[in-house]
Image (tube, rainbow, N blue to C red; front, side, top):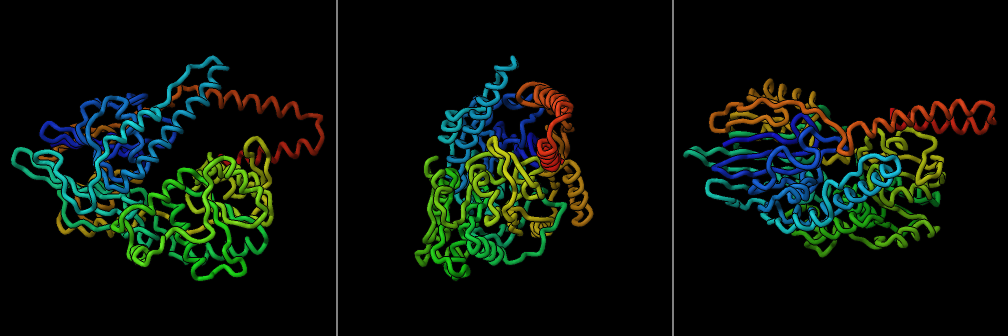
Length: 530
């Protein structure tokens, strides 16, 4: 009985753990790593034989947990994938969306590489791969014990992170010895709208535990709904639009939940029936799924609404934009409104068009409701850029910039401690995953110090014998490189730097106004990436 770590090992994303029991191979998650870098040996596949995987057990639908499933199929997997019914529904849309991004990115890069004579690339996987792997999904609901094969069963518990998200309890027997493993998945924050709080588990011989926010404590919760109502009120009073860059799955539905209650309570005065538009095809599909799934996935407040015949995320004045023409017409309408669109970090999607039309307007508000990574357009706007470049145009940042606090879907340090403290027994070992290299090691040390548990932060490909509780193989930190071609992207960066230097020299003798404009653009660029 072996456990090997092939992802989220001293890294935040790419969840992938392999259990080998009685000659069967079971993956817990098969997630995509963030960014374009990959580990050596995984340029277009896996370091293990995908065709030999018998089962996949999926904790939830986020791409860093599910996003390599189409690649697994492409490389020969034909087994069964088990998850909750909500996760199954969300994966049906999210994996197709991910495949579309893979194809579009490869097409865009190849146009550039063809002109420069560089190597052409293939998408990591295609829409066809995503469609095909979705045929291998099977639903298992919370609390239902499912035998995958003789001596191996799974049970999902609500992790409170995303619709259908789970912690997984695995019970495995080999050589007459039974071991219980708990894979935490992503542990949710408490008090989120729509979702239940995480369910606490009581017993495990081994725990595989995330540590994403183990290094921080969330700010004291304010009143998110009242803050949102205030922002909508003041913006509509000025005759402007509230533009909300939002992640399509999870965050968009939470915002709709808040707005429904704001309207019901009349918290926005003088704008009865104000318009709210969801302009993201993926968000629209996800919202439909949120409305379709069973009550088991919702918290008490949401269940009570459903029992009263009320859609928790539906209300008068809500409309959706399906086609590109629908999207374009939103900004043709002069009336003040709330616009919710993806992507959440403003790097792609229809949100960029809405920013182009509203960011320069003093009366409008750009409201951020999620994390903005360094280097993204969202990060630049949120952190004080005075001017940004969107779709080929320079846009002044005149709109008010607001941030809605306390919207994290991840448990913080306190939440992780509470989750671990719920176990009644002393586990044989705790494996700490899903965190930066320093973070996982620090949290493993905290677990040892504060709980007295045997805790480790495994490295990539590290393997353990679960019957003997010993490490079989020490892991390592692999070299990473671009999946595109080695050094190609960095080579372009250096070439661009040289061109900027030449361009600066050419500004000698130009007008002051031209030079000042160029300096502003360079300053904005430096702010965005520093």
